[in-house]
Image 1: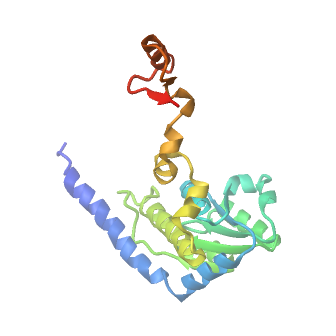
Image 2: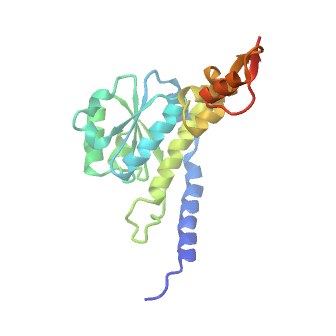
Image 3: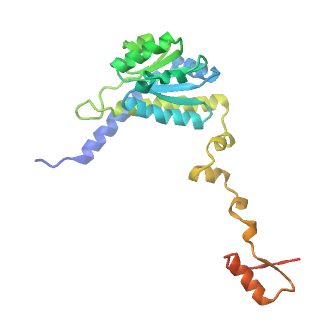
Length: 238
């Protein structure tokens, strides 16, 4: 067996992704601007849905929207058909991600959303698919082929879906004037949250600061420092 040229394979994969990103620029047109404007004005939430790998991408996009000031719920396409459609209200809008827009579950899901008369925004690579034709608003992206050597496993298509979702979220941040202090409200924990919110006061436990009176004996100072489990300077109480 010939040794694989992994460096060339990696470059080909990257070139494939870059080519698709360059093509995606055409999708960010006046239609895209109108969709952002529409999403910025809705009273409800942005419901993200999809099937398979598109669903996994949708989960991340929904989380990003929530942390950047656009209330969102992820609703798996399959679960939606088994009761989760009840989470949608008339004030919400559904964003449905599907590369083909023609798989059976997506078709069934779209039919039900239309019956509920909920605004539907389709994000697909096939304009003439069932999703493409039934969507109230549509974002179409084009890819020549997946990075998968068999052109089967969702790879490039999911990368593009993720980029579209992140672009929507960031555009809405600009539209709503979402600032750092707003981000902190929704992201107080983790290394990022601590970097933005942690103060010296948060790190200091005043009950553990050793202190003694001027007239105290030296052994009292030792006991005070030992009991507070802090070895260092001991201040004097007035």
